[in-house]
Length: 314
Image 1: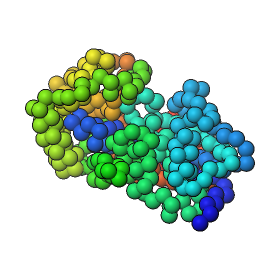
Image 2 (image 1 turned 90 degrees about the vertical axis):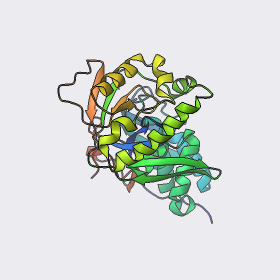
Image 3 (image 1 turned 45 degrees about the vertical axis):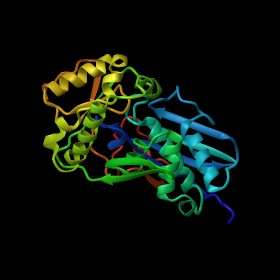
Image 4 (image 1 turned 180 degrees about the horizontal axis):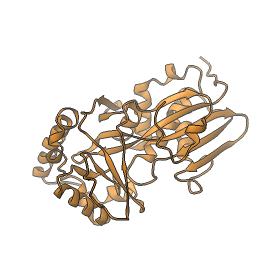
């Protein structure tokens, strides 16, 4: 059946995410209430991208923009490429900080491309969208919560990525400590050894299982549930300030972990009002996003164009 493009713009709101969550390396993720808004429209010309907010002036403005490359990959699956594209991106998710900015861009691209094709949902259903987004990203632990919302468990089968989303217990109170310095996932991953001791793997398996229970039913167990031996210690030398803040918070009884590949620190339990992380960190209390990415028709409105607003869902 021939593919036809829809007329007019579409827009998507995608949440920030925190992956790993301590022992849940490459598997567990949490969607957070901080959003990028992106609008796209098929045009007859070339590719035009405007960016405001995070990454403005630094991100590519054409075919190399990650939203565009993700749209291109999705259009290939859908059955054809549009003659041209116009994108407007309002970014609030910090770039290269361990809060899923790349996954948000990938998910935005996949969902925008699908929405710009008249029967896009039939050609690329939600399961296929997850598989494609994970294939572009390389692993599913950030794209899953971005797509589905809430607390997600993701895994990969021979057919591709799969994930489930679970409701989070009321006592979970995410706070992120975002530094000015950036980190690179590739650099953080390169610090990991090819093998780990069996005892460390066994410990992580038990704590990851406990973390599922703690996040969904027993937040009082979050501190022991977030103990990790697979990745955080190996990455500590490359992020000494992050490692130090995680240690200080945990010594104070706060269930703190490295967010994704860092350098942001995520606290899952309430941080005392008197706690002072110093001037090197921007502290933000964020709600848990329960809905995941959402697509709508039309251009970005005034609220979506505000580059500093938290971007609460309407």
